[in-house]
Image 1 (cartoon, rainbow, N blue to C red):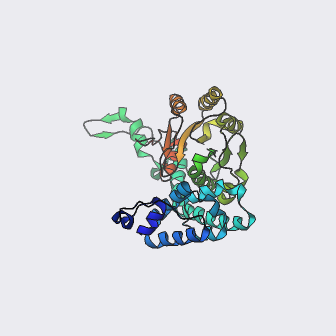
Image 2: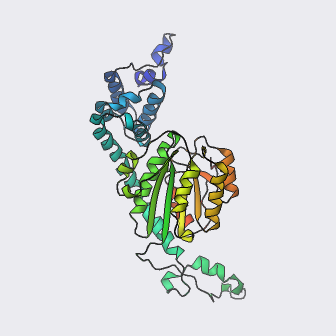
Image 3: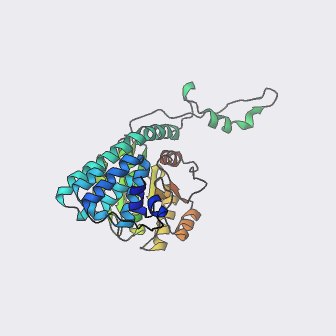
Length: 351
């Protein structure tokens, strides 16, 4: 364990006992890195292995070695590794791409298993509740809203409320009830968010009552909706890095809104705008004025918000679209709140 840590971070008990200073170094050869990867998987739990792999890529510049199939087979696959592979996609030789796709598919399938069931259940409930009926059957009565609507009929002598007006949940149907547009910034800092958003996009697209569009952007805009049945294809259709033109992306999304009152637009971006700032804000204001539910996520990942443009975040908040970081576990609740047009469950530590 000490040797594996010292190779990456320097130091180590043995070197300290001799009063010597070790420096980090795995060498430049693939065999030595492969041995090190095997060691850390032997001595450390998976969560620690993933952190050490990320540090090795960042500190020692090992990205190029990931272009070798043998190296990819040795690493512990996680969301951050997928992001690194996507950033190397254009430089990846054909001999490596098949292995890279297998690694990405494993991570995506694991994420779908963890997230899909709860997402579908949460959003199905939200969709049913969003379609209220005024003469519900007994089992369909929304008692919380019914009581709130009839508080004026409270009888203190009996300690009860007379429910003159009943509010109920709508009956489930196969019709499309909501349109969702995921607009994803594919700049380098958003890699984990792109991975999670692609998985959620595939889950949403599998629900008949939601029409889902997935748009990724840098300075150009790419619509990947027709690939939503396979999130791996979506991910390999992205190009991490490059500039950012949020205004252009929102213009594309705005042009594809047919039912504003039944549309949720989710912008996932660190908000470093390279396009026309005022136009971007005007588009958001116009969408909200037309009835669109607009959600701004600085990140969709487990790490919280990356560096982001605080001025733009404040401006969007003033328009009623507060920007905050969202974990994958919270995302279904955020979407449910947007669908039901109620306040978003914004974390206290929104950054």
